[in-house]
Image (cartoon, rainbow, N blue to C red; front, side):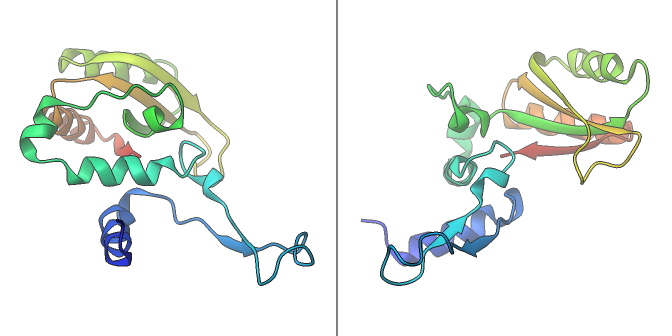
Length: 160
């Protein structure tokens, strides 16, 4: 049985890895339900779903041995999306995506998917956010990739 203490512990673990989303009162249904109804805007999470929270919590609970073996997900939806993304922010110049994928390939990772995001409020003009789904050799390999990209001046974060 899940206890309130488990919820508080999970909240502390995932705090730095998720988007803080607002919770607003619903005025549309206030006459339909006894008490106050609130909307939690989890659609503002990076994958558009609350599942970022559960996926991150599970990953943070894995032992080092489990983490080294890697994680496989059978979901084709939001849960899978929450597990496998690396977000990089680079200057939006010709060749920047090619240079980025070339660097990742030289480090021994396979690029499985790329999403190119522009036009969000948190992205400066002239920058682009590139989300990479990578196949790596595990946690240490991901850390090496992040360190190498950051040494090249690329802003990197693990999404989800």
